[in-house]
Length: 252
Ligand SMILES: Nc1ncnc2c1ncn2[C@@H]1O[C@H](COP(=O)(O)OP(=O)(O)OP(=O)(O)O)[C@@H](O)[C@H]1O
Image (cartoon, rainbow, N blue to C red):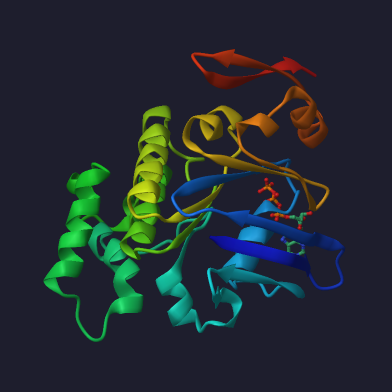
């Protein structure tokens, strides 16, 4: 279990962006972070991953205090798929292999390369393996960054809008694989999504952020028309369809 307590952050000379957040995420589950633009979702992930230093708070994975680990040690525990993919002339294969860096001494082993090959197969990226990353489409790059994070074999996977550039089929493929790997490896996945219906399809738990605080956290039952209206300022109907919730905007 990942336990976050009393997490506060403000950018220099700015207002408080994260105001004493506390929540937990369970092994084997995907937690969706939802909320309006500017709510602080990306800042939260960057604080969990030590890209930003929170002013107060703790992030513990079981007994391990993650914010006290070295960057190399942290990379064995946690992988991060950012909104932006780096411009790089490296091949797709080598880019995914970079995910193994926290574990490598001097050279990549056959096991490391086999893992990269199996991720290429799982994500239907075989044909791109030897193309330079900077010659790929935004969606193709997003899938490669996802594969690189999985190559890290993290205990905690953080993803910031990992499907924003993907077409519908690829969105479903990435989120379905995320869920499969999360369950199979008892990983903890925390993913920022803007598509509520996709989050309802592929995530187990939900955290709604509003005004730099947590408005609600829990399973599907917290996704109500009242909660969505309070969080996004948008009226919606929440329907039940084949046992699943479906959020339909009423309009502005
Ligand atoms: N480097 C920065 N310096 C100062 N303020 C920042 C910085 N980055 C973000 N902010 C501010 O912090 C607030 C939260 O930003 P953040 O990117 O965490 O929001 P978000 O919920 O991820 O938004 P979105 O859904 O638009 O990606 C915003 O008001 C933003 O303007």
